[in-house]
Length: 187
Image 1 (cartoon, one colour):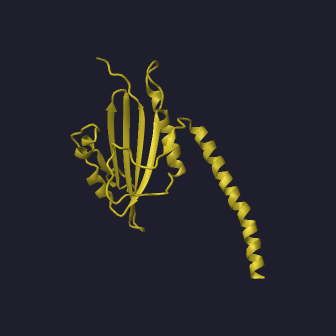
Image 2 (cartoon, one colour):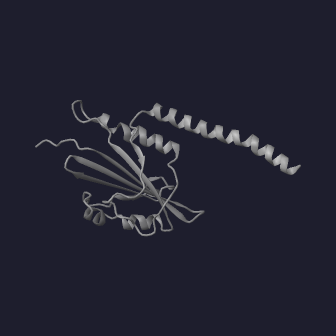
Image 3 (cartoon, one colour):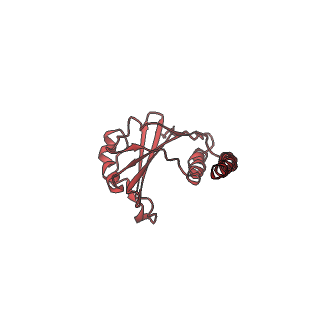
């Protein structure tokens, strides 16, 4: 009797789970269209060659939460529209990857220093480009780092966000990169 009840329960539960998946896909697509922006939001399988990999990073299967994806798509995807008419108004490509590590947010901050990133071709800065999330009122984010690079007619912005989970004692490290055509500078 218990076996038949279990099979009936699974038979009723499966369509509900499949419907949730379909609903989630439809909601994701509708929400993405509503905010506009670029469709060039891509998960990559490894770090870019000009971004050093900190020891202890393991690839994560974590997906960006829908609100974060929508925010990225709306804000980053529409940046080109801020340029003046006649200037390049394309968005570029937004690539991202997530890693997990047993190291802390401070370890991430101490690894991705200006000196290390400048050696990889990123622009130098007199001040640290990493800030503490708690110092900015966002305690969930342990550290936030931003770097910029220009190579010929190509510009890149790199964001590194580290968020620690007190329960698992793990830190998720998000790498987001926006590549776009550089706006020419007048002579």
